Image 1 (cartoon, rainbow, N blue to C red):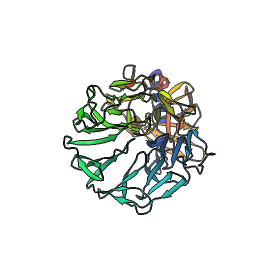
Image 2 (image 1 turned 120 degrees about the vertical axis):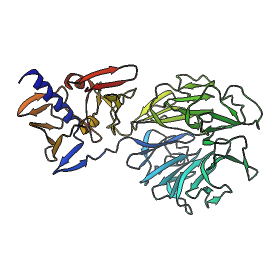
Image 3 (image 1 turned 180 degrees about the vertical axis):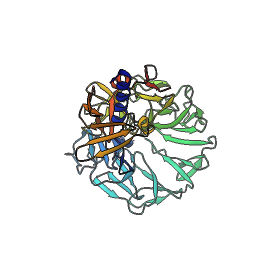
Length: 473
């Protein structure tokens, strides 16, 4: 076999190895089952944290505070804190979560609301609430938004509040409830009556913090209102009733959250920024130094969601690969005792592989590919999936479930691969692969180095953007 033909066969071997999750059996395309590792949603409470896994179960960690906020059946003086995520008992099919100072809430797929904490060690359903689409909590209260835009306070008997067409609600340390209505207007409550903050319009997101509240306009600017005695932004106005003012030195924001110390920003480029009182280390800058101006949180990028709570000093972020990162006061969830001043990775399972600090992107002929399973690190080697490349080749693959063997054909070539076996059969000839295929959450991954040596295409590594650039033209 000449060198050119051997290179072509090696190229085909690699591409087929990358594609075991896209199979054709008896002419019918099927999808390999996705794994249940990884996080789907996150929330922060006053002294605890919450996460929803891909299977719809809820996990909690942090201080139990004798109130049962971890939902594991323990409360009182003997209730133990947990340093790593622990499953909340009896909750499945959950689509949203929220935490307050001493209480946690969850919405199931059927629109019912469940709560634990506040002397309830296990989740119980809040009767009288249905068709709920969002929940929120503060120091002493909890709130739920129904799909008709009505807002309810979640006491023992839910009470409807006077707001209409509500799309979001947030409440922080001082029970400072703020409400966002469908028309982009922002409202609050004073002496039991609703009050519009008339200076705010075209608002898309809101967040209530310790003594301040924040509003994100559709132009990407963020506005702060309420007492500014905490020194969370530059150009402070010490009057409690100061009108909303634009936060300087931050723009292109797409989401906001708030801790008791100040705001947390997610920008359009999916970096995370924060400012304010840094007593918990929740600014994520590697120290406890306060900052009146927004500073970038270290070590997190390509973030899809941020989470914080106005009654505590901790923050979390969910990356596009489903990995969870946590920092600030209390138990971060990585098994350590206390406080993290930079984000740390929180496992969803003991079988999780260490994710790269920076997500790797893969471009094929200039187009960025997206993957259900992002690159991971196994034994110090970065592994990447290239399923999208295979999908464009038109290769027919037959899968033998009993032997975990795939037989692939393209033209005159026949290739046989077995999961975990470094030996591939190419037209009856054995070829040894550098590293055997590795299955993670239903996807096959291979080392970046193997790609460079075996693809036969032009492969370049861009360290500035952490991108593997593949060209077939």
